[in-house]
Image 1 (spheres, helix red, strand yellow):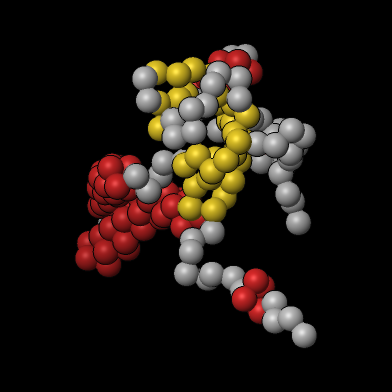
Image 2 (cartoon, rainbow, N blue to C red):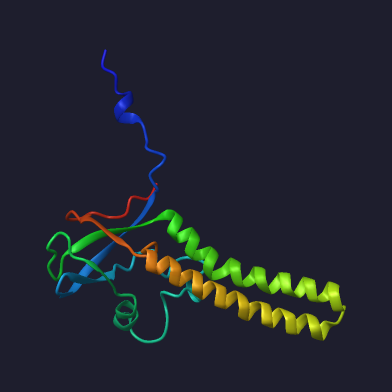
Length: 168
């Protein structure tokens, strides 16, 4: 009897990756510029009217605005299709930074002002100040995450011909 338990174990200590496809559109020295593929579901979800991937202008302009660059570890060439990934916890950290921090500071400052002063005007002023403070905190945290490289996608592999997303 063959023991396959070593092959079937999952390393839960490794962070999960969110993968996506991109095309190499330009090369500059040791860096490549990638343009993410627009998925077939893009525009088909219930939030499509408010989605940041849509916008003003042509599809080409929107895709160009979403370009990003990475190191060129595999001597990629223009036109190649690649798989890139970002750690799942990086997406969670980015979401918390963008949304939770400003909302939390807005609400906490509003609650404290209402409790301390009992005035709607003071509460509104405190909420605006809390929002501004929260946005500044978010910007600082986003800069810290970016400097550490937590928000940067990483090259995983060249995409195989005909490869698509594995949706389970």
